[in-house]
Length: 471
Image (cartoon, rainbow, N blue to C red; front, side, top):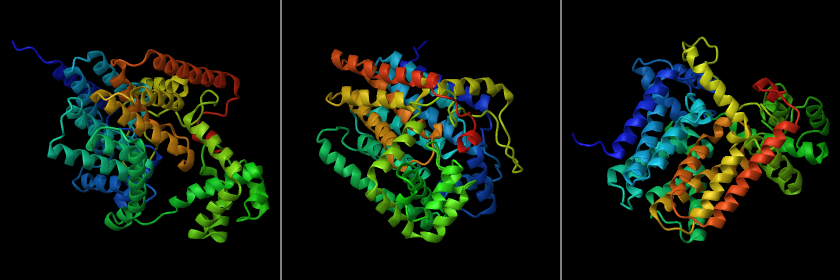
């Protein structure tokens, strides 16, 4: 009997794990955003608050008679495990069996897997990027160019991921350069300038695609970040520092505890007098002008505000059970015919929540690991090191972008960065690296982990739910 190759065994293991996750969580978990998107495709009226490309794709299944969230759940799970399976198989083919096993285990690491089963743009983005990475890795790890059909498929997956989240550009552009380009990261200044230009071009083109090609209406989503930053500056520099609204409005927002480091939502919900006031005093582009001018006048207060939010979203110096980390096992109550997985999935999600809230699940720890991989692999020229740099750079840029563009600290926003970090670490784990560099990386991880653990013990709790987060 012919012996089954290591690559085939890795692919088979990925298939079995995929089937297990599909069986455990079918038909997928629908959150509040999921229901909003589903309502849009049922009504045929789309806007850009949620990615219209995802809603348009979902509408094709709905029109064919496949209702509910199941088709999108199936897509993101298949993309996820195709990518992980190809990546693991490529490593196993080279004899890196432990690294291949680590890749497969990454796919069932509860904080990641628990959020990957949510039918959301974040899981769609992660699935598309995993499939693109796994497909490219099959050839890249052998220093072979991709066939034309693979280049086209990887490009389409990267394009979908870019359209499905506005901040995905920070992940997809470095991936495009590393997976579809020369594969080398020499001349970092030149490459950095080219990537920056590409990111600016993509961000400029996104509204044209969403509003023109995908025919989505314009929402007020673009006003969330300026509103949040102006409120944050008023909080740190005083109400008189942001004259776009009367000082008494900012004082009222302070009294109502509307300005919170974890998310902007109160400013447009229970404290909607802030958003409504800005709609009157700074309509349209005037809000952007006031935002940029206020940042220029109060850079320190702006930095304090952004760092406080970044700490919250990276879950570094935060109390235990910080909100918006634990995934749910059942769908939000609805009248749209959207169902829930079996209750047998609840223990898995409870474990996922415990690990996500711990220092082991903190995105800051994974960012530290990505930076370590970047530093260790940058000067090496092997195929595994080059791919590790590509993945680590994608993760690092994704996480650092939250310093300036984030308005909420949901754990799901870090899905791809954590997956990319795990894949990059698996690539460099079996390659020769300087002992001193490894020791420094380990020390950094221990420092971040220890300070995260100390904060979780010392800081007072703020609650666990969205209601707690929004005050």
